Length: 304
Image (cartoon, rainbow, N blue to C red):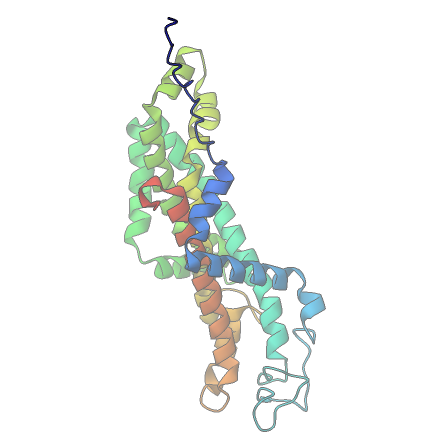
């Protein structure tokens, strides 16, 4: 009698799930935030409007019409389809000025963030890496700037340098600089004690290579989040300086300057202040929503 051999089933190979691509994973967390998606769409819309402002705007922003002073929007009695959102006190088309003002506001926000990110990253990176007396001196200066009211400090700086768009951007950049210095320094201190930095140092890497090639790339996530939030702060502060007459000067179609020019017509022509105010509100809110979404997507502790 032949012994029957029970054939055992062959073991099935278990396939490890493929790791998601970092960009796909990031988009998955970012797109889960509906507010962030709405902010991204609005920001892209404002960016397209700013890029194609000369083609979209129905009129040149500074051309006046003596026959159309304080003309209401087209849906009100006395309005005209030639001026969809009405005109200001000297007959300039409000819609065209808002469209061209989007270009100015984005330039202000991006320029301020670029200046403050570059300076703040260098100061925070060197302070967190070298530490000692240099770190204490840098951080105490940043603490002094933070203790002063931001808008008041910006007004003082512009008053010293003189009113104008460039001086206003420099003033706002100085005001927001401490945030980038503190964020970079904290990220550097957290990274400098990790194994990959120690390994690079043991392999003979110098200070500059350790700072800019090893540590800095791992500190970019919080800087990106802060930069997206900083654009909204820069736009709002620049609009406040323009409203006070210290920022962009007339006849520039800057939103804060448009509000300043329309103050005396608030009661009789609501549209001259409402539409520039809404433009500031929507743009600043969009950048804040975008920053919140980036924070949720970059921070592992906030990922759902």
